[in-house]
Picture 1 (spheres, rainbow, N blue to C red):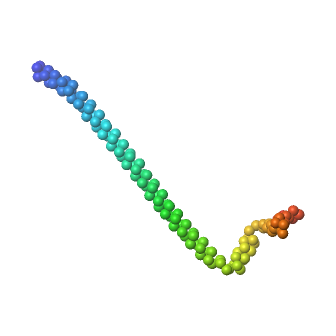
Picture 2 (picture 1 turned 120 degrees about the horizontal axis):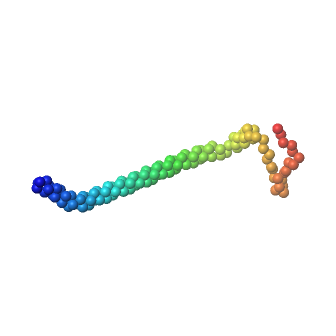
Picture 3 (picture 1 turned 30 degrees about the vertical axis):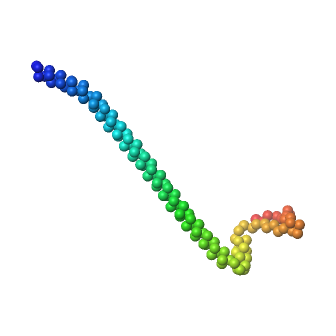
Length: 123
């Protein structure tokens, strides 16, 4: 009976001594886990921000290249149309024929448009 009593006494005493230490250890481990979670969340946010920045940079570069292409095309078209009045007239007439009939107002000497109030619409 003495040995089980001593075993019980040392067991209860060990629990009373060890439990507070275990609580401290448990809280330290929970704090470390929370810190690791916060650090990984921060790293994820930083990685997402870097990805957005790289994406925006590449999109801007693509837009600049597209604008350079458009400017080059405009320059080529502009150069080809210089001194080519017959082709421009052809494009204008072709545009008039292919579009819906439109009314063109020609200014008179007084700078006022000629109004076609009596004109009947064509169907």
